[in-house]
Amino acid sequence: MTTETSPAAARTYDVRTYGCQMNVHDSERISGLLEGAGYVRAADADAADVVVFNTCAVRENADNRLYGNLGHLRPTKLKNPDMQIAVGGCLAQKDRGDIVKRAPWVDVVFGTHNIGSLPVLLERARHNQDAEVEILESLEVFPSTLPTRRESTYAGWVSISVGCNNTCTFCIVPSLRGKEKDRRPGDVLAEVEALVAEGVLEVTLLGQNVNSYGVEFGDRLAFGKLLRACGGVEGLERVRFTSPHPKDFTDDVIAAMAETPNVCHSLHMPLQSGSDDVLKAMRRSYRSEKYLGIIDKVRAAMPDAAITTDIIVGFPGETEDDFERTLDVVRQARFSSAFTFQYSKRPGTPAATMADQLPKQVVQQRYERLIATLEDITWAENKKQVGREVEVLVATGEGRKDERTGRMSGRARDGRLVHFATGELTGIRPGDIVTTEITYAAPHHLNADGAPLSHRRTRAGDAHEAGRAPRTAGVTLGLPTVGIPAPLPATTGGCAL
Image (cartoon, rainbow, N blue to C red):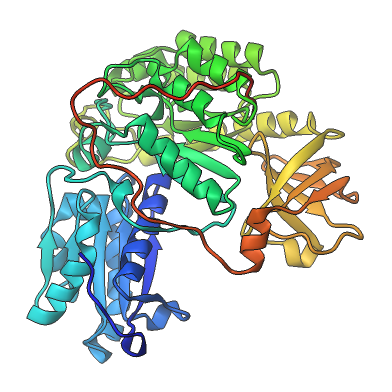
């Protein structure tokens, strides 16, 4: 449902996002819904008529961050009672009505399963002059049926599943996002094709456990087939995916990555710990030997693959020996980068009640040692890129020092961040493709200080220059139905990223 608002009276909105890529994509849906209901994006975020917080509940300080930001808005709300504040996402799903109790100036609380209700809830709260709290326990429609205002002209998120069937003891996500729901392959490809028709060059396939895709319709090889099918989409230049789980990572996925030309040779593979004892306590159903075996197979098939990971330090009961085992795996895996976390207790998870919670100072000290080890490795791996020619998809917001240094920035096919000089070339736009040679390596980025070797103008660059953000209507048919899924289209081999 949408509500009609005359252009002269159009209310403005601002969406503020915390957390993972799933939340970022959900915020694109929230923007699409609001614009479909007649709202317009606020030129001045601080003066928006509607402010939506799309929250995360993974980290311990998530609650403090939300309520601190809500507190900052309270004076604005008191001055302008017509302003509305909405809170959605995982923290809203978890805290529910407690949010309104702690922050009575909030107008709407909605959960992870009913994003589509937001425009109606805002209208109802305004009409009734009372807070509206609506939290559903399961999905009624797949989120991708909702209209979406894409933030990028050149890269797009495509959800292939939502929810998770794993039971990791540190993770609260399954209880907030629910059991895994898979989209039909044809629906996923329809969305990919719709994005490419808008000029998008790169898509990232999203799922809480992206490579378990197919569990709902009983096809263990469905994810590899989907990657190959993406190789047949004309105009699609790059395919990425996040995040896979080692327990579901099969040889056919490695083969699909290696053989499909537009699938990037970049892999984000969460490790969490290198200690088998800690992995067991985390209820992660793989061990370090299997993890390193997957890495070896990936590199055998794709020697240029850049592999990134997630690591948690200080899980309850982690000993010094356990931590040293993590450092050993890090040294063997040779990650190109890593997302590192100090374990934080989340109420409602089994790990929160485990004995042997570690002192903060122990966790901090180990965390600093991990960072130092990773920095040495990522710098050494990046130095191997010096002298290589790389293809860069020019991006916005990647280089904070670009104006000062006279460079532009983007991502190489393997996902590495590249800051490049433009030389005598003019008219390079976000969304265009530049080929350049790496001249310098730092632990977290690469520089290319010579003139670009080539510049290709693209439809994505045209869209960015015209200020035209891709918008996709609902392109799926809802949740999967019972029965045998339609087969994926045949593709003609080869794919690399």
